[in-house]
Image 1 (cartoon, rainbow, N blue to C red):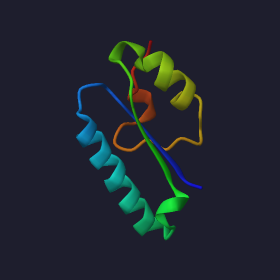
Image 2 (cartoon, rainbow, N blue to C red):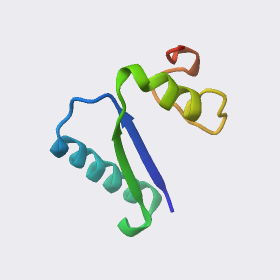
Image 3 (spheres, rainbow, N blue to C red):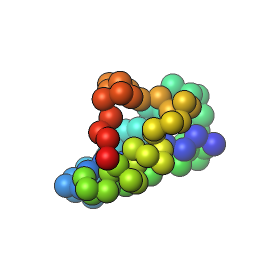
Image 4 (cartoon, one colour):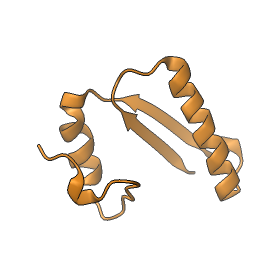
Length: 79
């Protein structure tokens, strides 16, 4: 079961977050050839001041299985 977890800074409306989840699900279904019910898509807001401790450290830094699009790992914010 593919799990797509998007974390972003606060500031977008519920409608914008829902549209993002739908668009990601549609594209993932197209690319992976799996039905909608196979996917779980989470869109979470994380405060900028919490980003390092809640996102960078536990989910990205030191995790060779994470693919980062558009920003090299060495450019991720440091604590």
